[in-house]
Length: 245
Image (cartoon, rainbow, N blue to C red; front, side, top):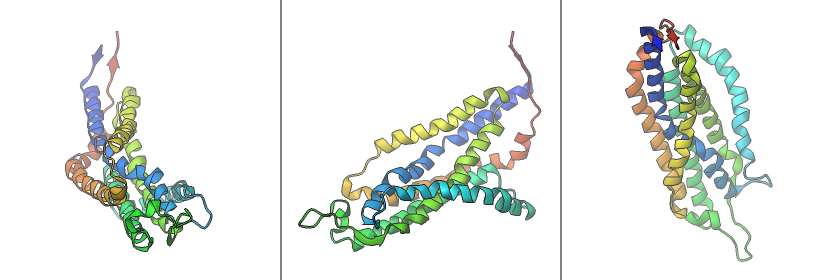
C-alpha cells in the first residue's frame, strides 16, 4: 500500500475530529433528559388531560422551524457581519444552550417542590383516596426546555455531523462518523452509572447537568480554539492519494 503526505495530513485531520467528539458524551447527558426526566417532571404538574410525554413533540417541531431559520437567516446574517461562526463555535454554543435547557428545568422543578403539597415527595404525592396530587402548574411551562434542547441540537449535533464529514478522508468518513455516533452510547452508559436517589434525583440532575454542560462547553472551547483558528487551513488541504496493491 502506497500513500502520499497529503493523505497522511488528511488522516491526522480526521483523528483531530475524533478528539473533538470525545467531549460529546457530556453533552448527551443533558440532551438525554429530554426523554426521561422531563417526561417524569410533567407527571407532577397539571397536564389538563394531555399525556405526560406529549410535550416531547415540541423538540421536532422546533427543529423544523429553527433549522431553516438558521440556514436562511441567522447564519447568512453572521457571515454578512463578518463573523465566522465555525462548526466548533456552533458546538460550543450547543453545550451552552443545552445547559440553559437544564437550568429552565431546574427552575420549574423548584416551583413544583414549592407548590406541591408533598414538597420533595412530589413524584409520589397522593391524597387519602390514593388520587395523585400535582402542583398547580401548567405543564406547558416546560416549553422553554424543549425549545432550548432543539436549538442545542442544531448547534451541537448537526454541526458535529458536519465536522465529522468535512474533516475525515473520503475513504474514512464512515469510520469518523461512527466515532461521533458512538459518543451517544458512551453517554447512555454514563447515565446508568450516575443514578441519584429518588428524593435527590431532580435536584441532582437539574442542578448538576447544567453545571456539567456549561463547564464542559467552556473547557471545550479553551481546548479547541487553536484548532478552530486553523479551520480554513484544514478544509483546504490538498487531496491525498492511496494505492492498494
